[in-house]
Each structure stands twice: as structure tokens, then as C-alpha cells.
Amino acid sequence: MHAQESQSNSLNPNVPASCTCFSLRKATRVITQFFDERLQSSGLLVNQFTLLAALSQAGSPTMKALAQILVMDRTTLTRNLKPLQRQGLIAIEPGQDQRERIVTLTAAGQSALVQAFPLWKAAQQQVVERLGTEQWQMLLFGLANTVSLVRETVVLRN
Amino acid sequence: MHAQESQSNSLNPNVPASCTCFSLRKATRVITQFFDERLQSSGLLVNQFTLLAALSQAGSPTMKALAQILVMDRTTLTRNLKPLQRQGLIAIEPGQDQRERIVTLTAAGQSALVQAFPLWKAAQQQVVERLGTEQWQMLLFGLANTVSLVRETVVLRN
DNA sequence: GCATAATAGATGTATATACACTTAACTGCG
DNA sequence: CGCAGTTAAGTGTATATACATCTATTATGC
Image: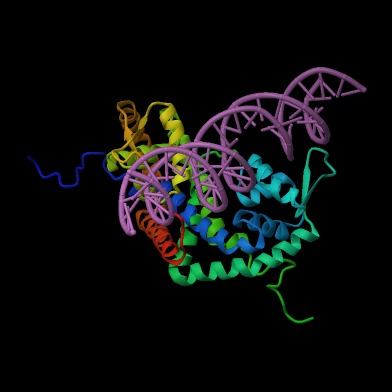
């Protein structure tokens, strides 16, 4: 028998341990639960909070522009905006070009955003502190690089 | 007017740019699309591929044990296994303890896994190469740390 | 001006995610 | 034994994600 210590009875290498995608999905599950819990009293989920924050910065973008800002599929954005629209936190109206839809933060949306902000900030600070500023910066850098490189490599629809 | 260059008309800091959760969700969206595209000819989505790979390593775990391995909510796992069960790639049977369900990879599942593996490996290698081994390792380290720290900090159900 | 192409967005469908709640089965204690 | 409490898993519901396709509107070429 040759030396084959690392040859398990299954696949080599260990997929769940080394897969970049699985690691990302797992971390996203955990951290989303964390932020959602911290934002609970605001009535917003973290994804919804981020949408409102992005809108606050972007002004009144079209669906397409907002999707590009968020690096999110147009159809995903349509569905993600539904709960916010239902709650009256955003408004969606036709633009000059009648094909376009202009998304705007309502007064209620602005208010919800302001209310949720300190909750988000506290959660964010806790994550940064626990990771350490340096490791946190490396993580964000790695994530941003991953997004850039993959987007250069393949043709995504958005 | 005082100097307030960094005071935009919206929130400070820039939430979408700095939010750990948003960065993770965004990177996960992009990389999931990348892996799904590369695995397309196998008929498996990357999440499904990872489930099969985890099963291959774990043997015949209960739902609960598998959920813990994957750091995935039990109910999410139940739903995620449905398509694989429908395709005959896994089997779910009651255990000794009739409350438990034992999940096993079928011959078809093993075959699908073996077929998809080189596709996964090529995609994974491309990501590692593009990021550079060192930065990739830092990323995976940061992700693993994030999972650990958040799980220590809050009580998640799984 | 009109037919065709291109573009913006919505909808159908399927998977992924998780909380609240329910159901079924086991454990322990009297 | 028998019941209370615990545990494993499934279901109801809602959000998140994205591909394929459809609809409506604008742009283009003749």
C-alpha cells in the first residue's frame, strides 16, 4: 500500500471545507440571521434596510440603475421591492420614458431608515470589533475583489 | 458654512459600501451565478452539489446532524433536499429512532456527484487563481472566522 | 410614417432561506 | 403503566434569488 493518508473514502479535496461558494453561502446565512435579529425592532430585514439605504444615496434611480448599483438581478430587485412598496416605504412610478420605473424613498421610508440606522451601526460595529479592524478590512477587500473578478470572467445578465 | 465634505445628503457611513452583510450577500449572489453556470451541464446547482458532497463525506447522517454540519437551518435543509430526493439522488428513511430521518446518497447521487466534480474543481481553481492563493486563503479564513464569531455571539436556532 | 429591433420592466416558475407552529415519537418520573 | 416534558422533523408562510419568457414602450432604418 502506498502512502495515501489524505485519500478519504469520498472526494478529494473536501468540497464543503474548501468550496469558495459554499463558504460564502454559509457565512451569508449566519450573518444575515445576526443582522436580522439586531434589526428586529425596526421591522426591517437587513436586505430591506440595505435597499432603503441604497435608495437614500442614489436619489430616484430607475429599476435598472438601482439593480446595477446593488449588483442584483433586475427581476430579483422587482420582487425585493414589493414588501417595501406594500409597507409604503418606497414609491414606484413611471418615468419620462414610460418603460422605466423610478423608485423613490417615501417620508415613511426615510423615517424607517433613520430609525433602523443605529441598530445596523451597532451590529456592524460588533462584527468589525470581533473580527478586528484589519481582518475585517481584508474580508471586505476579498469580497469586493471576488465580485469584480467574477464579473470580469463571466457574462452575467445584470 | 462649516467644512462638512463627508456629510452627504444621506446617511453616513455609506451603508451599501461598508455593510458586512450586504458585501457578503452581494458576493454570494455573484459567485453562486458563476458556479451554477459552470455546473450547468451536470444538472446540479452549486448548492445541490455541495449537499451531495457533504453527504458523501458524512455517510448517512440524520437531518439534524447534516444541518449542523452544513450550518443550515433544519427547515431549510428539509426544503433543499426535496429536489434531490425527487431526482432520486438521495434517499430519506426513518432511523432506529422513528423520529429521525436518515439521509443517504443513492447510486445515482454518487454518479451525479462524480460527474459534477471536475466541473466544480475547474470553477474553484479559476476563482483561486484569479484571487491569488494567498488572498483566497485570507478570504476563506475571514469567512470561517465570521461564522465562528457570530455563532459565539448570538444564539441561533441551529 | 411604419415595420423591425432594442430596451425596461413584470410575470411564471423553481430553488433557497428561516421563523412560528404542528406532529410524531421518545424519555423520565411518579 | 401512563402521562408530562423533550426532541426530531415537517408544514405554513414570507422573503430572497434568478432564469425564461412576456408585455409595453422607445429607437432605428428605410
